[in-house]
Picture 1 (cartoon, rainbow over the protein chains, first blue to last red):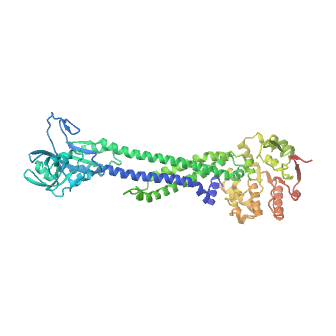
Picture 2 (picture 1 turned 45 degrees about the horizontal axis):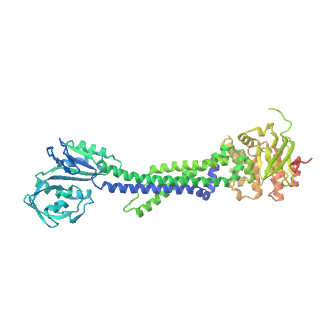
Picture 3 (picture 1 turned 60 degrees about the vertical axis):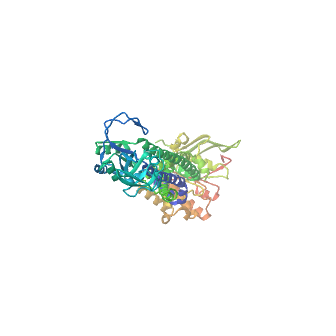
Length: 385
Length: 226
């Protein structure tokens, strides 16, 4: 017979009472796990959506001089040679270490083109990639489905007085306008957008690329690291991370995580208070036992050990049960509450933290009740007999 | 070790309680001595102060004034934890209404006082089984208290009180909740423990228990009646 046998005997033969005692912890930890799992799934969802929303890395040929352009206003004055990247070399991008973080890769060819005596910007794109990168594009008509179809920016369409169904001629080649983009406020408003291969042909730049816009999934990889890896593979290219886009993504997610942690802290505090109250109640109910322990020679420290050991065991049990409960609830709730949301999986690291947190919380909340129990005057406790 | 005439010596013992605005004297100027190996009953009516006196003899209650010496130790000069150690080493309590721990088996209840000793596991087991056997409950050692009769529960309480082989056994109304046959068995058990060398002090209001004792002390209104 050791002190832990008393705790084990109490837990083993008073299961319902013990379950009630652990309930505060189970609910507290369960709520936190559910909340954090939902947050995790939501932030993944948000990250994925944000990742797909626009480019966060731009790769362009390295220039010797800087262009004098700001906010779309070209002030000219500096001559610079126009260089292009080799389209065939683009496949090297998939050999970088973090290749799995690469999402949409949208190559483009840019150049001037004359249509109806007017000079416009011709942009050749891979429509599948471009549309994935720019889900905000709205159009009248349809997106091009064939090589002889093109898309007009809103300003370009006005300038050419063209609409879906119109035919335009570029370098003696006829193209059908399949659609006109609604104004976006971006460069595409002024552009004539065609497929990459026809545009390269018209511009006489077969196999060349002016610019590549990349959308990288940034979970677990710093964007600067990705740009360095890409730059290493393309020494003649200038790879730029669009930090503003990345930072706004991160800020949105961090804000959401902070909110979730705040709520978790609140739940944990309430859980701790609940444990303290139930432990105090338990100690009061056990006055008689404590009186007997003290009368037969248990020291105050022995009584504290009994109460705290029970609290520790309850804490471990509460942590485990809360973790299981939280994951179970999250698994059920996430698909019901999040559009296209899916359970992010069991986070074992969170499990470890929950176990430690629950045990520490239970011990902390039981410290005062244990001290109170140990300080009971054995004679007063015996009077309760 | 200093040789003393008496195992227990009580000098000018007083215990007063505040009952609201009123001061109640439960034990009033008690002087008595009990020798090693004696079997003493303390008799008195309800409220006479006999249980309070027993609590002070058992190092459970600090007196207002006066001294209790056991084995020449001045009990109330000791600190709380030293008093706990004293109780563990010197005293076996038999409480009124058995006072067993409901979630522990007979064997575990009997082993309880040994949980704070440094005895080896095997020794504990052997000692506990020996006393359980002595009180006639060997075949019920794995039962929970609520699976036993009143007399059996009292015997478990006796086994728990003697398992650490304390020199002094203090019993508070040990037969109070038992029928006369079972009460006689328990008193006979205490008598045999006394023969084995335990000093026994029994608080009771049952005159039939007097027959088992070597000396009877009567308490009235907190004083030892002459």
